[in-house]
Length: 165
Image (cartoon, rainbow, N blue to C red; front, side, top):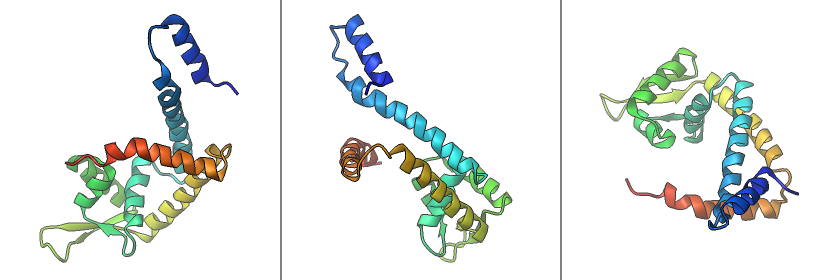
């Protein structure tokens, strides 16, 4: 079965036979898949009245386990945004009743961000919807193929995810 990347690669091989365009065969597919995944995620989140960034914050708290709370600094580390951005996000989620700020019992000046019951329900429902969308995207692959693909992608992404600093 031919895809758009096959046509793109064939055109570049015809137009620029002097270049090795093999990386396009993998990375252009990854890029196209990322766009399809982004659409599927936005659909899954919108069905639960969430933006992608809201899902990221809520699920970071949900994954922390009971009592579903983290410091703003821990949320920064998990979501890769700036301090100012995180403050704004926490404010907006608190206004919606999805998180609450609590004093940090170990640091008089610190706060903790805790998932509310409504936030937990919304995160759980959105995750279930996301997994349905992602399962559909992967449906053409067998379990063994999904495992092999996951291992290969891990090999490519691990160096980026483990850069010190």
